[in-house]
Length: 149
Image (cartoon, rainbow, N blue to C red):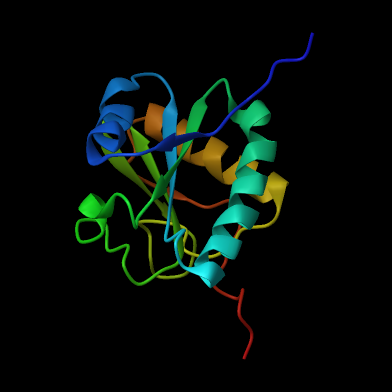
């Protein structure tokens, strides 16, 4: 019998805090998004589809959530979320985990990451670093050349 996986939506600031605070063994992955905006919602849905597909692969070491920033604006200032339509952040044992993607922003993923393998690898690398007590890990892929001008 195959297991089913769901990505839970965090509907209040309290729920976000509890998700971050209550998980002691797994990495907490939260996709924050401005779901009321049509263009942002399209990006959020595409990213949620990727997160849903990787959820079974990472279920032993990560829990994935979504949060609508329009309904839960509590973290916009603290995590500088208001400029991006979609942001993915990582937490382990109540600590914000950072990852050097080569973009200059080590706090979060703020672009659509469409590759399931890359997403799985990033989550796994951050989890392994977190278990070793590292607050900052290096991404398995350099995204600095993602946009070629």
